[in-house]
Amino acid sequence: MKQPNLLFVMCDQLRADAIAALGNSTVHSPNLDRLAQRGVAFTNAYSSCPVCTPARYIIRTGREPHTTGIFQNGPFEIPEGLPAGMEERCGPYLARTLADAGYRTFGIGKFHTSPWNEEIGYEVQLHTEELFENPYQRSHDAYARFLAERYPAFEYLEQLHGERTDMYYIPQMSPLPAELTVESWVADRAIEQLRVEDERPYFGFVSFIGPHPPCAPPIPYNRMYNPDQMSNPVRGEREIDLMDEQIAWMNYAVWAEDINDSLARKIKSRYYGELTYIDQCLGRILDEVEARGDGDNTLICFFSDHGDHLGDHHAWQKESFFEASCRIPFLLSWPAQLSQDGEVRRELVGLTDLFSIATHAAGVGDVRDGIDVLGVLADRAEPREHLFGYYGVPGTRQFKVMVRSGEWKYIFMANGGREQLFHVGDDPNELEQLLGRHPKVASRLRRVAYNEIAAHTGMRQALDGDDLKVLEFEARPLIRIMQFEESKGIRDFGM
Image (tube, rainbow, N blue to C red; front, side):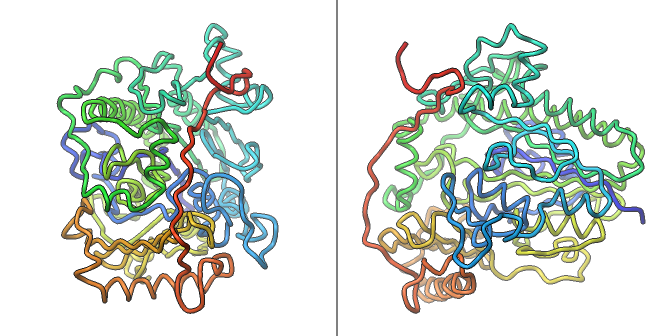
């Protein structure tokens, strides 16, 4: 068979439970449903480092943080003994790998590279981000440049996707009409690339900025969902929910420390509105894929970089190993090769596996740190026994590790040596701490975590002799994160 086209589509901060076809009776997602119903949905899919920059380097390298060296947003720590360059450590980026395999490559949307304009191997790359540190970045952002050149009346806007800082989790409406938002622009540019005539198969990477906060859908999606019909956040015992110090710290940082249920429902209504709007944009892309005539031999992967707590577990944002934060949607559609019966699979998969999926489909299979998911579906490869998650620089108080094994989830936090154990099969909302009732399970999974960390040079600072390193608990000073438009010289409140 001819090499298939490959289309990766991702959202930012989209929860795994926000797809109607997979059980959400509130949200309207007809095009995500379309993918799920004609393909395969993995319901135990995870972001192994659930925050923006690390997750995206996992996707483009097929490597876990112990090799990329990126365990959180912010300064990177190159693992000891490994080369300084990212591609030297990890191997060629996915776009470069597929270009070498004969693909025409294009990437559109948010990439969250460091540096912000890093060259990552696409033949055509239209790169757009949320915030700009200086006028040069804003003028060289593909979407911001499009607006400035074609619709200069909107140049007065400081932030193109909604207000941040103290408005980060305040329900909003897009300052732009639906046809001019970044989501519509991404879809338009993707459709242009899909219409390019070329004998080569294509690899397209389409990356939406939403539904990442601020939750600011355009008209009419801003009023699509009635807040009174939204569910309240799911919370457990406060001392268990807030055992991970990152949660309370981040709540305060993004001005979300005292959100009540009424406001939480309003936020969710706008979050769902943004999702449904993106779903409509996705539908236009899917229609174009099918109009080409080679749609059956196009492998589409849909996923997100991580989720959003949306108030669950007394938490907002991401960066924890609760399901709301680290479990992600993971849909595969390839009519020529995969089931078209809406198959649901429960194997443990993650962002690391996307590299393997693309390269195996292209005939140049490279598993790297993942598994051969297509091989698992075809019964010619073994599923993974354990799935690991990492956050925070190893050896620091922010470091934590997760182990998913069967239906068990174990979490270890270096700051104070705190531990959590949940059975997500019986308790999908993770409300019951089982550490005291199942100490042998916790001890076994702690040893599994130790062995995995010990196997990688880039994480051994997280060990202390023959155990995980425990640091005396220390609370971090609370800070507010200012997210103003620095390209316009705005860095703080005031005129």
